[in-house]
Length: 276
DNA sequence: ACCCGTGTTCGCTG
DNA sequence: TCAGCGAACACGGG
Image (cartoon, rainbow, N blue to C red; front, side, top):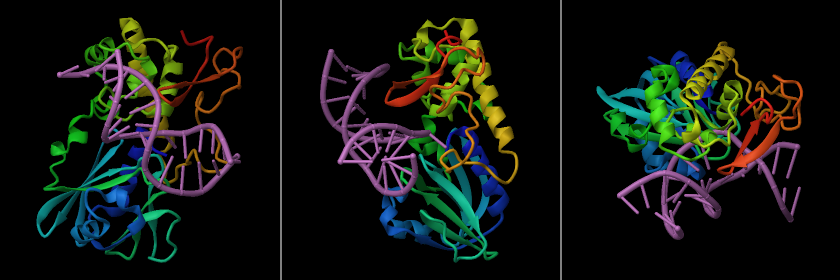
């Protein structure tokens, strides 16, 4: 599910569902131990039980959850990986498929962290000192939260001969841009994803910045309500213009077919006619 | 059976 | 020294 817009949706959901509520107990799936590392599932459950949700921040694809336990701050760093999602249930029966951790709240509802592929992470951060976590410290600016500084983006791109599509997915360059939105943004910017990053002109870099912001904002706006359609759900309509549309006509020129290529072991979709 | 997947990390290489 | 590459992680769906 998750790139920046989907994680933003998760952050808003968590705020609405959990802020101000206390965790009465936690049930963890022992087989999902890798999610809780370096803590063991048991230690994780023990340390977080009794904590109250204070607030939720998002940087890129990371959720920074501030908790308070026994009057002391405690952080929960959550990453959804490829298939993670937060799900709220009324009671404690009706457990979602692939629930890996169930947080029983003080109002009888249960918050589930569901994750099929186990690439997600739930990590406790002592004192809620998120800045001290290396993977958080390494993140570049979040485009929605901080905007995109053109000079900084130009510097990041100019330093690399990597394909621009691969480069803008680097979380140190733009935190939160993943495989889908990288393709979507470069289509909007009319830039060939295979171009070396350091080959782009200043004007082209400006187009990339504008396009990244636009596709992220569009998607966040689309997810405005309580519901979100997950790409992987069977029968869900594909909301993207390029992603997973190989062989279809380009929606811009109406002439060329959308191509699928592989870059850095990930699928890229683009229009060979419009994107130069 | 085989390939694919919205992400990250690790070890190797030049 | 370090950017870049490929494999690995894990598991269901087509």
